[in-house]
Length: 189
Image 1 (tube, rainbow, N blue to C red):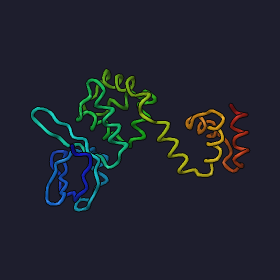
Image 2 (cartoon, one colour; image 1 turned 180 degrees about the vertical axis):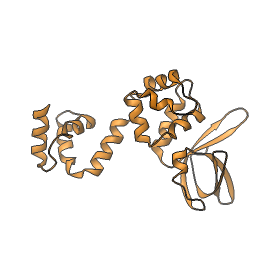
Image 3 (tube, rainbow, N blue to C red; image 1 turned 60 degrees about the vertical axis):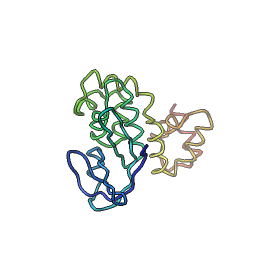
Image 4 (cartoon, rainbow, N blue to C red; image 1 turned 120 degrees about the vertical axis):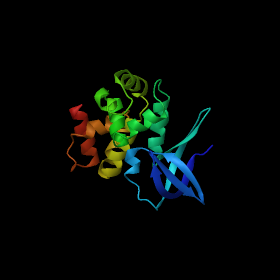
């Protein structure tokens, strides 16, 4: 089983790229979002999902692990194959796709090639609680607003999860001390 490839991206053909790994060229399908991040003749690491069927062995590549994890969740939804999952991942940033699933934005998901209303609804129903939106959003917010870390941790110590803590702190004055932020967040709740 191939789980990752690190090599020189040489060229593309029919939504595939060729990754040269020590003289061996691997044809890998990637999303248009990842494709737009590439510079040919540079080395990249791709996380690989190997899809083996009776008559083919396809490699799907992802520049980040979160995209691969969402891809695997998508293909486990009835009616969603690897090509449809890649079309969904080509819609935009992974955070936006996760948000669309979490907030049941059926019209956004339907913009992907091969996704009708029923498939989009099935994706929302089956993945709403599995997209790890709280984890990715809270990590983004904590990493980008480090001054809130203590306040988030304080609220979590009181029994709130990260998403709830961040939501409580969203309207709080950022110039306050951590303790004052917690007090103000609890008053607003």
